[in-house]
Amino acid sequence: MEMSDWAKGLPLRAGENFLGLYQPSPETAEYWEGVTRHEFLIKTCRSCSKLHHPRRILCSDCGEPGMDWVRASGRGKVYSFSEIHRTTGVFSPATPYVVGIVELEEGVYIFTRFLPEEGAPDKDNSSIRIGSAVNVEFQVLEQGMLLPVFRVGGE
Amino acid sequence: MKQLAGSCVIVGMGRSICKRGDPEKKTPLQLMVEAAGLAMKEAGVNRTQIGAVFTGRMPRTYCSLQYNQAVLNELKIMPTFSSEVTSHGAGALGTIEMAVLAVQSGMIDYALCVCGEASPLWIEMVEGSANWEGDLQFEAPYGATTPSLYAQCAQRYMHEYGITPEQLAKVCVENRRWALDHPQAAMHKRGPITIEDVLNSKMIASPMRMLECATWFPGGIGSAAIVTRANLAKASPGKPTYIAGFGQCSTHEWIGERMGFWGAEPVTDGPNLVRTGASVAAKQAYTMSGFNPKDVDIVQTSAPFSFLNVLILEELGFCAVGEGGRFVESGGVDYDGGLPFNTTGGYLSFGQSGQGLYLLKEVMDQIKGCPEGRPVPDVKVGLVHGHGGPNACHSVMLVTGEPLN
Image (cartoon, rainbow over all chains, first blue to last red; front, side, top):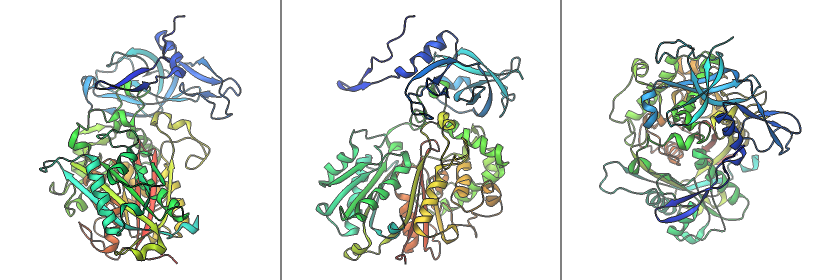
């Protein structure tokens, strides 16, 4: 598989002056590669099997650095959310939209976009409530990035 | 820890303000340096006596690596101990904590603490603010805004404890009443507001409406303090303010990862979005000082949203966990007869100016009986709460006008 070189670093400049390198996140590269294949991946500790947020470098339970990627079921519940009415830039035309924290079936929490149940009237987000069951989908959002999002539905 | 109680004093406090529309538009560095000069003058110390310089985080509108070095370069101070204290807005009180540890140990005699911001004078504040509070990789691409990050906590707080929108609106109404008396407050001339006004204001990020969100202070504020040991207080001309107790606690950086934290206070029994580091910081400050919430005569908080003001009252021990809504509803922080709370108008009506020591100054002025706004009678013990990041970093400080026994 062709992997993007996430570890290259991007030069930061102030006018003509080179300030240093901004380092992107090689430890999450595989998460984003998974997204391009419509696979939702989380991390698991090679030593103690604890499941983690895709960013983790070191297991916060056992302290070991080895991490593997596992495919999550994509099922979860709305843990918290907020319907955004005021924002700026490319996101403005999309208001009101809902961002929040999903509690994955695997016990890992991650920030996301929530979508209302299929067939809901346009801009009606009332099906998104704390505890609503949600499933992962992949959508290109307003900035043009393909992202995992979670839609209300199922048991 | 108890040996720190009252061991150190603030012998000089300076503040410099520049408001939008003033003839000269000042940078944060100008404001901070002016404030430092005022503090040193009040303390009666010169630059060669200052052994440590602690600054808050680098201002958004004067980005310079090693910001603390830029400050001491301007003041021509040559400290033997110096650092930038960067736990978001909680780092402002953090500078005083560092100063106490440095002077109480005997390493140095005088520390200068200086913080400031002037963003609203120089940049469009709404655009880009989310990128300072949010995770650029896992939150910003979803269109998160700063209010929407805090709203994650607000939603759970209301859900778990049955807090009502009316109860949250009440704290906005009371904050505004104090602002009408404070000449520097952003909302000084905007008149009073009602619970209905709050509930009818535009939705920003549910459950929070416009009048429940902090307004930006319409300008910049630099603030500075000189800290020394209590036994050196006599060398300064003014009346000292005693640092009775302090504490600090950070629980995360990004709200989307807060649920990965547990195992210690304030999330001993498991992750949640409703308890904060403020309870831990307060417990430490109370234990150090020997005071309890009943001893406190005045409280300032840097809570930028309605729900956080109410929640912080619980965290600071002024009411039981989950009782913040009922406490506020039943007059707990009423302008008339309640606990004097956010006597400048708070972040909601005085305005938020990045980070600074201006809330500490308000408490010191009230203790000395010379506040800019409405005086609170007989203030003996004051509490200041500093906060920054999306509910991430909290500091608490207790001060008094008299030595502790």
